[in-house]
Length: 165
Figure: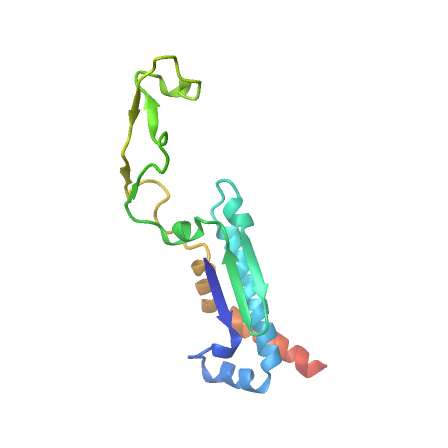
């Protein structure tokens, strides 16, 4: 899952920012980099951390003109966007099996000799399970930073640095 901010392909900016982008392209790129760094830091704070793997998978990649925030954990999109009810089926023969008559807390032990097993052919994971609702840990900080004018402030700060030098 990733969020890409391309300084070259920005459309719909108000006139003031467009003028700054045209007159001071380097200051605009640097300000956009500062803005996305702020968004990245805030997304790390908002990122849910049960095990910490998702939070540690976050990357900020600044290249020529494009700034990308990535979360490389395989389940990042499912956490961010939530997921719908879906079918879970066993991939291997012994998956989703349990020993008949065995107490759950003892099921990790080796099976008894002559034990009988029950198998599941699959089941639905319902939408109303805990933590399946969307948790937009990347989109929410981006929108709040835009609403409070962080992009404009970062660009103006960089523009002033360019003027002072």
